[in-house]
Length: 163
Image (cartoon, rainbow, N blue to C red):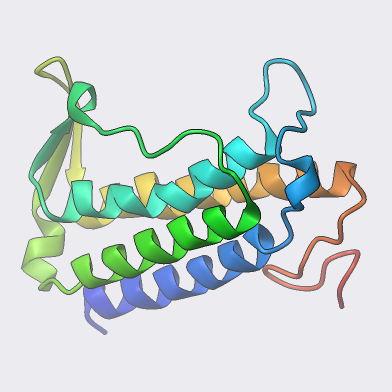
């Protein structure tokens, strides 16, 4: 199996699970926070919706400087806005995955103000900055939902709310 095919299968699986979770965000709880230092429920959803945009920053470039990374939005106005941003970023990034194994194995670097922080093959950077990052924040969002008595969907198997 080509590296591209493996990444696409993983990407599609994680994006479907993420969308199921984002669909549960209630419009009347967008500003809710579990703690003063935490993001709001809406901001966390917006962050998840925009994380696929890192795919383009990784797959279409050989390096990215954090000072040049665009802001991907403020507090969302609604769940619909979050889902729209997610669907857009997910679709764009899926197209960026149409690469050869050699392109996916090419090195990519993360920099801050011109200084290289680290380098990874693009496929590894994509898994780290897109897939693992999404899984991490999806875990946070599932806790936010649980704390608000909102049913958590099954993601990798049954949840306490869905079998």
